[in-house]
Length: 198
Image 1 (cartoon, rainbow, N blue to C red):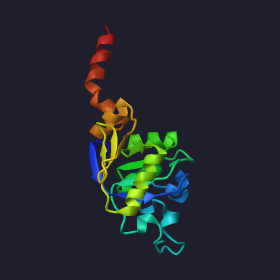
Image 2: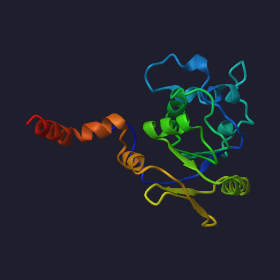
Image 3: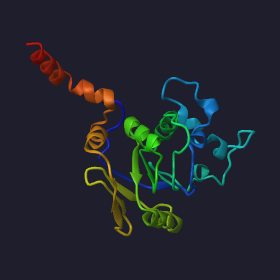
Image 4: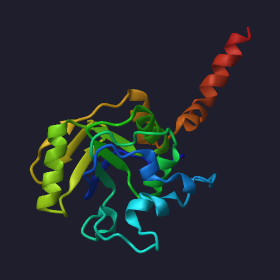
């Protein structure tokens, strides 16, 4: 299994109300030397989280102890810039299982689905409501229901649907990446190949 299975997630959220966050801001290029997926979370938003002397920038949301949870609420056009999948590795390794925005860069969105982070694209107006909810109560809980394709503000009951292909939805539910999916179909593939020989 490539990553944790995803079905229903109930969690508080970390707000990052900044538009046009690119992948170099998510994980700076100087941290891309590792070949394994582990350890990237330490440098997630590195230049926004730390000063040059490695002291924390307390105004940054990830350094604010009031904010916690497995959901990252991001501004519009999140994940733009280069196609590096390391950005999603960093998000997953840090502990986030879903990212919410009103717009994602296509390559970033696909990388999320391949690595086990659910990208939830919603309307601008609903995104604003979520940010307002967190401003009012940083302990607000949100529900992500993958099967129903819904994101809900638990406190108010307000919800909105999001889109995901049936293939990626199935993979997320099973914790499969594309290779896991093919391995799971190994017997069917072998049977089909054997029939084609005759």
